[in-house]
Image 1: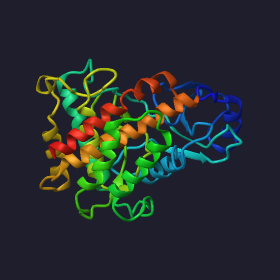
Image 2: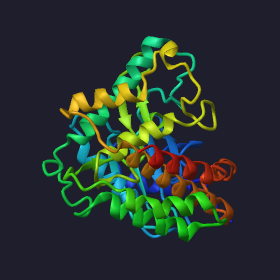
Image 3: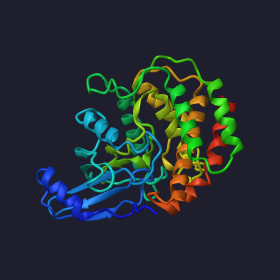
Length: 342
């Protein structure tokens, strides 16, 4: 079994002392419990704290765990209206700690594990969700040529290539047959709207638990986990938010299903979409059910990969990975339901 729970502190310290200006060599390491795909560690030094994010060791699916892309996109976004953690260095030499990694600043703020934001007042909930909306619109308005990301994703129909990619990834990590997933894979290509020509930077997994917010306010300080980012179609990110909200409320679903949103200061799906459209100067979005169905499909494929890594022994958090694996058919059925409503 490959160990993803520890880090070679001596190797990391020696490398960073040589490569990272201001690093004094003394380091204490804590592993973050989150980060199913790429194991993530807090590096604590007497002067400042850093975060190290690495590829898992072992045999991996092709094109997965692209820490080099995460590093590149966060470096490119520095100075834009999209808040990111400042990045310092990328190491692609597996000999240092066993796999590629990068180091960035630790952003001191608060992270919400689900959109209920328990313990917060209504004004905070409203403000945080609006900040999410504002950053999402800013992300999709980034001038990709100006920040040097024109080649960050291929030309052509984003959904066509994403459906092909994640179908391939799903089949490569498939452990059990799921009729709903098979049906969703068959249905998505036929439901795909015509390409409207929008080509923007997309995050790929945009949700509240991938963001850091001010400890005493509602401003977003950093968007995290850029592994799935590419040049693509913006509505996939928007639908990703709505997808999460349709999940059951609580620690497992981390959604808003069954909640009285108005009583909690949380917006309806329709209000969030309308605010996004207003910020981007859009009159509305047709065929939203397809974009939502696509996001459910992609998430089902992702968690199937997480489950496969757990069974193979190289998951970042094996117990949670196996729990998540139960949701593959659930997400697939939600995807079919979204397409039918469309």
